[in-house]
Structures are given as C-alpha cells and as structure tokens.
Length: 116
Image 1 (cartoon, one colour):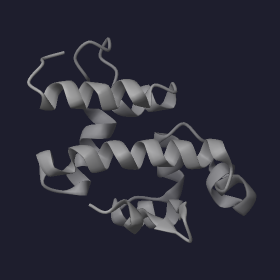
Image 2 (cartoon, helix red, strand yellow):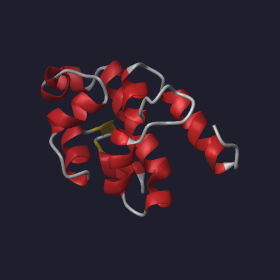
Image 3 (spheres, one colour):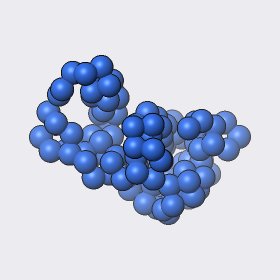
Image 4 (tube, rainbow, N blue to C red):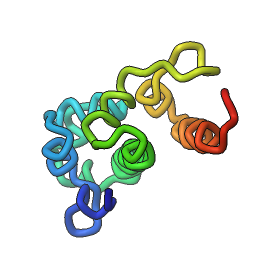
C-alpha cells in the first residue's frame, strides 16, 4: 500500500488510518502507545512523537501487508502475533516501548530467510 493513503496534508492522519484499518482513532492511539489526547488535538497530532509513532505503525503494517494479503490482516498480526526472540511481545508492544526498528529488522530477517 501507498503510505500517502494514511496521510493528510503531509501528516499521518489518525482518522484516515483508523478508517482504512476499520477501527477507531482512539484504538490507533492505544496501539502506538499514545493517549487519546494525542490524536484529538491538532497541535498534538502534529507533534514529532505522535507522527513518529503513527509512521512506525504504518510502516510495519505496510511492510507485512503483502505477506498477509490485506492491511486488516497485517494490522491484526501487528496487534496479536508474538514475535520470536522478543519474549512473546507483539509488534504493537515493541512499538509502544519505542522499539519499532527492532520490529522492522525482524521483518527484514524473516524475509531474508533468517529465523529469529
């Protein structure tokens, strides 16, 4: 999927992300470790932290989408599938801990045939 579909005026838009993933913007905030306030106030939506967390989630979902065939299934994987080598943590939990790069590296390793 094109990352631009998740954005509005150059910023990742929680409402657009929620619409595509058939959930609520509040749930999107929770899945990236942000409070409801971070996605409701315009100044907070524009903040570096909010945009970084939204981008990380979108990049991860986008990267695994071809494997699963849809953004919805990729999002379900992001939220619920424990990743090998991370003590049973999911991609969502790792992103909430600020470890999105570890998730992206894990996906790259799996795609390269390395089993974590």
